[in-house]
Structures are given as C-alpha cells and as structure tokens.
Length: 312
Image (cartoon, rainbow, N blue to C red; front, side, top):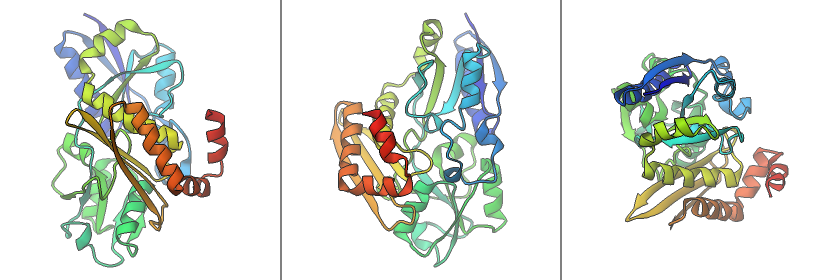
C-alpha cells in the first residue's frame, strides 16, 4: 500500500472533495496526507472572476507543489482546470459526476419565472448572467464571490432576491435548504466539467496513475472530455459566457453548447449527438463560431483572434 500526499484548496467545498477522495483511497488501504494550498483565486475575493483574467487561478500554486514533488496528486473541481494542461501534468481520473445543473436559491421565490421585475440576483458567472438576462432582461445582476456559506448567508440576510449556484456543491455540502429550482440545461447550460472532480498528477507518474485508476468513471470521462473540447475550440474561460453539457443517450454522446453575450442580447445554442467526444466537441464549437460566436468572442476578448491563430 502507498503513502499518498493530496493537495487541495482550503475552501469548505474543496476540503469536502479532498476528504471524499482521501476516504476512497484509505478504503483501498493507502495512507493519505492532505496539504491545503492557498491559490491566487482564493486570495482575490473582492473582484468578479470575469475581471481577473487569470488562467489557472485556482490551480497554479497547487501545480507548483506537484512539480516540486511536495504532492502526489491534486483534487480539483474539473471546471477549474484549464482545457490545456502544462505538459508536466495529466488528469489521472475523473470521478463519477454529481448533478451538473445550476440551481436557483431563494428565500421567497420558487423559480426564475417568479422573480419580480428588477429583482436582485447574485452570481459570479458571466455564463449564468447572460442566460438570466436572456430570460429576464430587467433583472439586476450583482457579483457574488465567497464560499457557499457566505453566499447563502447573504441571501438569507436579504442582500439578494435569489442567487445561482451549482447543484453539485450544495449537494455535497448538504446545503440544499434554499434550493427552489434545478434549472434545465436547455434553459441554463452549465460550465464545462461542472459537477465532476479531476484528479491531477505529474505526467508520466505511472505508479500513482495506476493507484487512481479505480476512481476514473468512463461516462464522466467521455462527457467532460467532450465539453472541454468545445471550450478549447472556443478558447474561452471565465471572461467569456460559454456553456457545455454532454450526457450519454442510448450509447451516444449528446452535447449542448452555448455562446452568449453577457447582456443576454445574443444567445447561441447548439445541440448535436456523436460517438467521438473530442470530435463532437470541436464540431459543435465550430458551428457556434460559424453562427456568430466568433463575433461575440472577438468583441469580448481582443486577443481571441490572435489566440486562435496561435493554436492552428
């Protein structure tokens, strides 16, 4: 049996995730140690994610510890991992996925349609903002950062009429009391990888990869690989409203893709089925670009065209 050192962020949800993986590894007979690492994203809590513009802001310091051999593996929310890892790292396992949907939490209102005009809604995500604005242009969207408890406390204090959070995090922490609506993916397409955990190791660490193989879920691997292929094709991150959700349907992959303008005035959706996850993600991404996604992306990010050319 092995001695394994796990790295994690220190938030309540990140620690739940790390302890969950630790328990599964201990059940296999391994000795596990946990190291908490503060990332750039944890240090910047008063600025909306879209304005920070730092790729890997929740992973960089953890990867440095991996590279320095202070850790053997890192547990991440998969949606925090960049679509292109540095060549020093690999994703050894993607765990069985939790509910990938977004949910509306509120003290007073049962669903999005019940929100009054000019209701105050909290979210740190441009993707969520864009889709909310498309449904109700009158909504007042406010930036909301902090851990799950902080966000729910602000809701209970009346700072917001509603907030939008990921179902997965609330389910894992058992904080579902204020969930009023699980929003269908056709209405609010989730972030790529939402609800899945990615276990990162040093590239080529065969021994650790072998020990973690039992954690890798084939369906989660296929669907999130498809979503991340779409995201990579569009070159997006926190600064751009992009959604991707794939699911297995009768042995095939069905992918819902989204590109939107943050103000909700233009929302492009594309749904398609396929067998090859990477090809399907790239095809849906290409279709969204051809339908006007390129114009949205260029408007939001002046470096988009340059980045795309560099990847070709």
